[in-house]
Image (tube, rainbow, N blue to C red):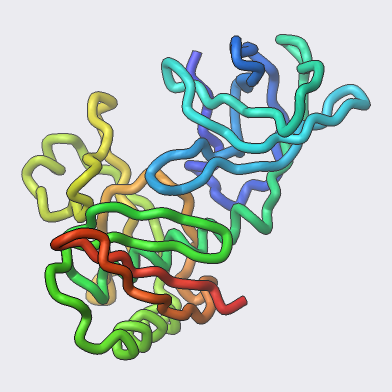
Length: 240
């Protein structure tokens, strides 16, 4: 049985009830529904805790399991709640929210640097995007200013769904060269920033995002590193 992904419908959900449906041989556990985002797409898995019957289990991260399951990985060796146990799951919200802010900011970075993306990583304090960039940026300060100007426009961030056939007909939606959106489910999830004439970005993404760009706050452009003949890594940092 696949895990219901509560974070996909509401990335601001911090707490939810669930039932343990399985244990894994590695010592993880699977719930029927999860507020924990599993590691993927450059975004780390969520951490937090489970509470049940007077007990408490710290969760270090979440990863993808078999057949659409999400596996919660305990932070320490402990007796797991039995299959069928009702639990309350609670996120480390500060960490998740910072991931959301960084993730949306990286989408905007791909707007102000309109080059193919070769990789990326999200953290709680910084994030980075690797670009197919043979030549260095002429004016990094202008890139930082443009990025913060987009953030300050407080654009709405929303979700759209298209069919796999629609994506195939619009290959320009995919910015990442190294990773293609998962296929086989029939639908592709898109993250849209801005609406109507103010839309600035639309691309496939399965991660969690904030509701408006103004929630990101100011960011600082880090050092730009050369990572090969054509690749350059551009990092950003949250100011607070």
